[in-house]
Amino acid sequence: MMWNCGGWGFWGTGYGWLDMILNLVITLVVIIGFVLLVAWFVRRILPTYELTGRGGTLLTAKEVLQAR
Image (cartoon, rainbow, N blue to C red):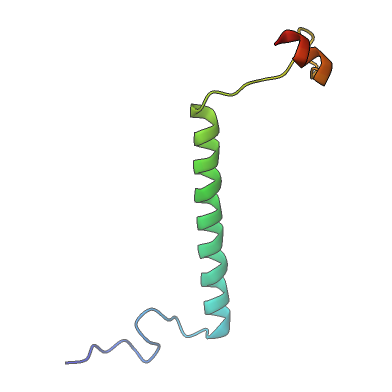
């Protein structure tokens, strides 16, 4: 027995290429957003090592070596 899907296919809306491109763009945006969310979460959880001095400026290579 076959399902009657209205002639547009099971998932289609009848817009052809526009529908396919829009679905691709939305899917890519969701995937990229999920990857960025996971990357942000991992950076918040894992310890970070900051190479800043007392004034909040980045230390030079010499200053880092002296600190070690």
